Length: 221
Image 1 (cartoon, helix red, strand yellow):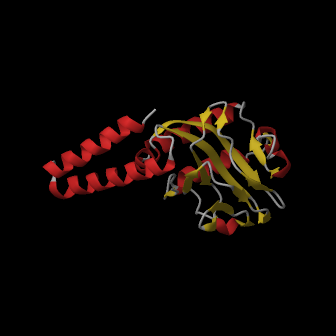
Image 2: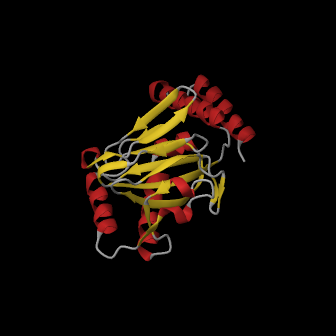
Image 3: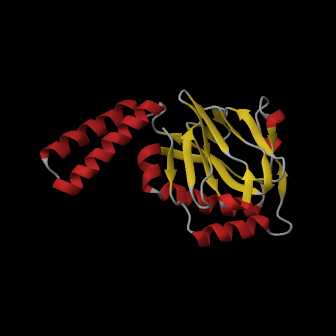
């Protein structure tokens, strides 16, 4: 299940992030340094030095915005966010077909997210392409909007053919390891919240809540 956070950040918050990231002297490094051994040959981008003070400040603030978002809480059931990175791609840069590592230094990768920081009309190419059994889907979202998707999918970033693509990416370890179970829990939670808004705390709401809570207890880690 993929879902969008529309928006995650306001226009003003996006502009502050962009100004900080694109200021002269910002420490960018070769993105291949953080790729797995099987993906280094297809990763062509630059990433903000994760050891820099700027990275620590921006990553901490952005993680807070993500964890406070109600849709992310309901659909992802996060234990933690980890390995947040700021990435930029100029002409000819991108990231070829790959799958994210299952385990990273910060935790297990159940879900991946991409937060777009450049408006689609500021660059060409650079689509995020996801592969699933139904085929491929290309994603270009407005600045400040984010896409959350299963880390198990093959995906790629098409080469940028004009302008510059600026994004933040990272990973989520969920309380629920399996994607199909997260989707079922999200549907139950959505249904019980809608029922509560319409009818209050009636018997049917309590029964659905019991099922939701017990499934969460049964499947959670």
